[in-house]
Amino acid sequence: MRNSLYKKIKITYIKTSILVAVFAAFLLPSKTEFRHTGENLFDIYLDGELVGQTGDRQVAEECLTRARKNVAASREEMVFMDPELKLEGKEVLFAEINSEKELVSNMESILSRNEEEMQVQRAYTVKIKEFTVNLGSIEEVQQLLQAAVDKYDSTDSYGVELVQDTSRELNVLTTNVYSEKQAQEEELEEEKAATDAGKLPEAGIFAALSESVDSVEFEEERDLSEYNLGLINMNFGDTIEIVESYMPESCLESLDMAIEDVTKDQETNKIYEVVSGDTLGEIAESFNMTIEDLVAMNGTLEDANSMIRVGDELIISVPEPELSVERQEELYYEEDYDADIIYVDNDDWYTTDKVTLQQPSSGHRRVVAIVSYRNDTVVDTEIIKEEVIMEAVPKIVERGTKIPPTYIKPISGGRLSSGFGGRKAPKRGASTYHKGVDWSTPTGTAVVASCGGVVTKAGWGSGYGYVVYIQHPDGKETRYGHLSKVLVSAGQSVSQGQKIALSGNTGISTGPHLHFEIRIGGTAVNPLKYLN
Image (cartoon, rainbow, N blue to C red; front, side):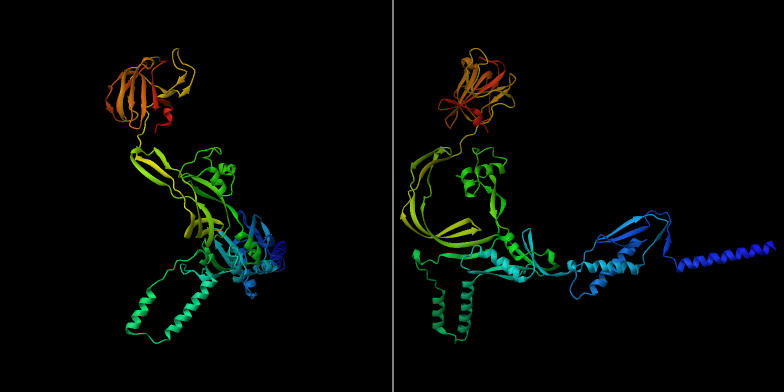
């Protein structure tokens, strides 16, 4: 009896468990049992909004792809979509997840809600060097480029056309700046050529005469008043690329703002190479800078009195727009001018020797010139006609052609122990005005001729101890003192670098060293200024 009751209870329990399982499968919310494998449930966020939950990252990405296709298919216009999908994972035992249908539907709602921001339109990107600007139509591109030309064309004589860039495989446009007058002249020439083509051809001697006359070019001397002054040529100074694209309206720039960005002068750093006659003040003035700003921009300059040499490179600041315009103008003006310097070469003189034989004076002239500009900066001037009112008198300079001798340090190594000029006497009997420089060096150090020449003295020199004096071809004299041994004799010719003595500690001396002098016209000068 008990066994029978037990069996009934067991059967009832099993049936009840099955019914509960079926009920849970069909009627309860979708619950999934997860194993302990780390992140196994993901909250899905689209553009910062919660979409739902899934247990598989790939499902979220596939649902977004389907949602984007559905939204795009429902629109006639092109739609730009760049949604941000973000998944936040966690580990759970049981959780409710959304079906793929629910996820796609929720994503579509979010994408559609941002429809205005996602819509794109045809646009044109203008690239000038590294600068780019996006405009809404090809007409705006044309107006932008025309505004850059009009900035320097007060007579509205030049226009801009967009042409295919034949050097590029892709569909890229570039620009051509043309003259309205030139275009009309070319059109008249084409009409004339078409008319001439309809005439009967000439033959024999008449054809030969016509050909010879056509080949002769007559150039008449023109008066200054006969030149057509004004703008004669114009073009862009930078490469321009224009490409068609699609982008949201928010990425487009207004035409007025684009014109300001492209044509407004920006401070641009450039390199200037110093030429003969330049001074810091003149360089700063020519580029509308202060000397203080020029010095601040160049670490090689200490102050306004810093020395500059031909070939030095300086950083300068030049106001320049994003799009540069190059132009040529035919101009009339009057000016004072200087004649070129006339040089008379003297092969017996060194290149450091110069004598002015005639002082210059400025002349005056009327000029027609072609002046080339880059933006507002003059880059070249070519005089094509001039009338001299008063001739300029040239400066005449006689100059030497021989390369002057050079001077080297007379010892290797050594420590500079006493400089040139006033000093406190290091020892009783020593001079308080040092006529040379001293290098402290061990006795017996080799002393060489600083420059080639003729030895005028070799022996004892009173306070100098043992000395060597050498006279050089350029008139200078070098002296070497406190020597321990003299290796040359008076009247002997020596070459630069030739060993002439050994250093020592003779004469009035405070220790082993070499005393070295350079004299010009008998007057001692600072030797360090002449050593290479």
